[in-house]
Length: 52
Image (cartoon, rainbow, N blue to C red):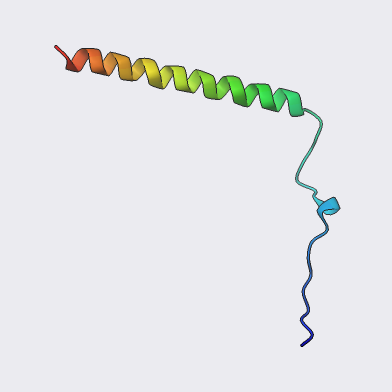
């Protein structure tokens, strides 16, 4: 049983540019943190308005 399988070589990964990894990491971290703070305070405000 001879199967013709072509597995891609990981060294040919052309979609990734490793130039600004730290900037991407910090942008994602602070962006997600900001989003979570907005969601948290939005829920606090909604709970406060519903408790009246």
